[in-house]
Length: 175
Image 1 (cartoon, rainbow, N blue to C red):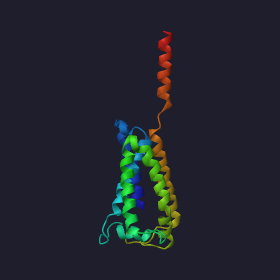
Image 2 (cartoon, one colour):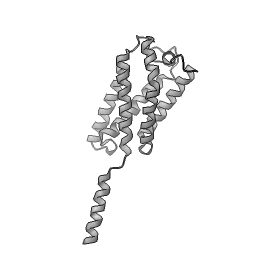
Image 3 (cartoon, rainbow, N blue to C red):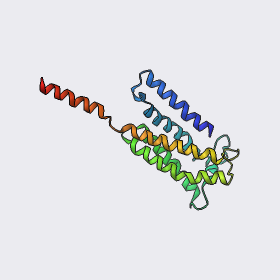
Image 4 (cartoon, one colour):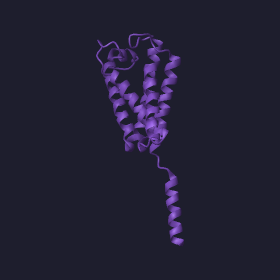
């Protein structure tokens, strides 16, 4: 869990540093956060496809143990959620898709919450260690939801340039 948060934070800081150094794509915290969340999702989604005999990182078997008993086809659901995370990551880096991706990811994170609750309450081992406690899992999911929704707003047009253009047009007509 701390690795995942670390990837999110370090990615965010690297993208913002690039923005400060003149890379226009990362000129805002919001867009940098969208890209950082995408980087984190590529990492977390990869675990959905890792074979069970790989033990140095979370694997497919770990993820399948997280799936609550009321969800059918747990193995398939793990693969499906991994694919959705990868699609969401791609959407976050594509400006035109960022809004839909952010909203869709927020919904996905809400839908994945029962798996996190089940994993914590059933003490499902993860990555060869103990289960992450519920008091840590819930705020983590809330953080991801908040970043996804915040990133989704990065494509909302800024009304200021339109207003400036309108004022310039008015001055041109008067002159």
